[in-house]
Image (tube, rainbow, N blue to C red; front, side, top):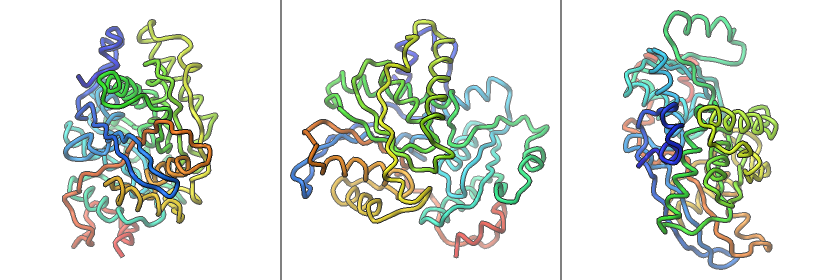
Length: 351
């Protein structure tokens, strides 16, 4: 029962397939805790355990993307990200498991604690890592590593309309869990909003399920990557492509979405963190037994905690969508004896 979207729309399922990567549904936990403002309770959607090997939200997108790549005869998956990108790592891990070679075009970023292990994991699975961005000739680099290699190119964060469909499915999955009595209907859902595919898909999925939930999309990247205009374009295209595959998808689906854009927890930019973010990560660890990080999920948690403490809080039901992988990587953070497939410039992340 992993294809909630396909089960609800059989004609869509005939035209839009997916390779099973995620163990679905992911659990929902209801938990209570004390705050300075008094007792509070929330629900947590545990996408951090979406796969026994490597969890997180990216796997939902890759299910549809990898299936399409296989149908089109691709032999290599290529994608983009910062050097510590969870999306790039998830893509590389599951590409190998699906029989694809993988190339990741990675650019530099602020130093964060997980980068060394991420690079060592890429090294272990043999990802072809290509330094990208900055003064690099991007067009020449893409030609060199993509031409003639039967490569399927996955956009930054996996956030195409096809990737977003994975979170349309997630919205219907949550509706099923509500119907089963696993949680009450949330008034709000909080999710980290990076390249927007997860939040776009979830907004559409909740609307398709007829749930009156307000999605709080907490921006964690610069506005050149995520902004309301780009969100609306991806929202519209995803809805259009779903309806093209199945005419029973409501024509006014985008009008039914309820999204609140949250900019105030960016903390200075991508991979930057402030005291509010750090406190939110610590709170999640101590009170909720959740391992979050400061780039994405810590900022979404900061928004939720802020709203729970607000004088305007009216006792509503809030849900936190945990998009971070909590599965331990089977590598150390220590520097490798030789760089192998790690570009020399990235070896500084081990210092």
